View 1 (cartoon, helix red, strand yellow):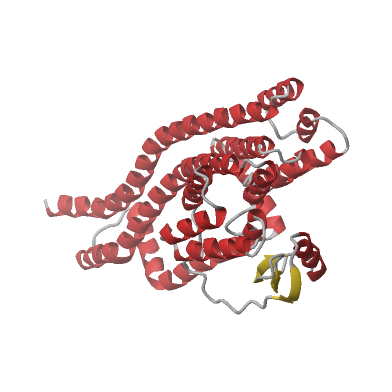
View 2: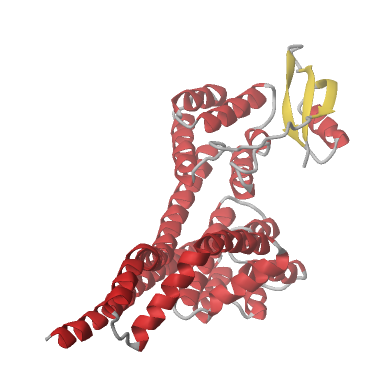
Length: 400
């Protein structure tokens, strides 16, 4: 949605103004009139060309701290505008400081807190804004903010476990390849010159390594550029719809890792759904927001299919089951939750269970990968060293 700059007067006759996201100028006019604001002017904000966005980022941990601190200040019965001013003053992130300050100015101008936050969708997503709106309507804003903080902290913990599972093998393999390239590029050519001067008889493995070293020396620049280009092409492909589907399908089919990522997605779905339902958000809106947090387009489509079936009148259990993407235990607990009226609690327990499953799976993966990675690194480096020392043994035997 575009951002509009508006000016006017509130019901007390004071001049007010600010920025607001809206579908159109007419929609914004209706919103401001409901807030008893006499409109002076409305214009679309023209965005300047930004080449760099360095620093314009708010980490999830910072967002969790903000939500928890705002909940404490509101619970202590401080005015909302004063609470936002306090949080803006103490945050170290300059971009986040500007965001909080802008939110405070819009609230002071007459906007609700969730409307002010919707100006910054990259900082406050739909889940955050919907729960804030629910808290404002029910008079339990501090409770909703605490739930948001708990939700974000658990999602950060889950993301850390996924990174641990992904980064460790990538880091080890990258280190091994860097060492191998350095040896082939700088060290092995020295041995090649020595062998040529001594006229040593070279075994097959040594000839192969020397040929690889010669090839690397000639084309290392092109190989480096090709590697960088491949990364950029992959990222560009992954941004396309077909690319996302191909990559996400492949990830779910990878042995061990696929099961972990599937559990991560189900944990995100159940926790998000539980948090939104607890906040009093409607089921269809809950499923719409939940689909965007799964982290995998395959699961995202499954959730949207579930939403379509629920809109047609089916139960949540039947809708989940029809997609064929969710495990039996989840379906049974959702069914019990629907029958007993404790769906939000059941979904929360499911999320905790899958979080524990992810932790156990990551620990098992790490224990399995450690010896495999050691053998892999040792095999590459040891193989190169062995290939260089075999002719040495042959020369020593000839000298003797």
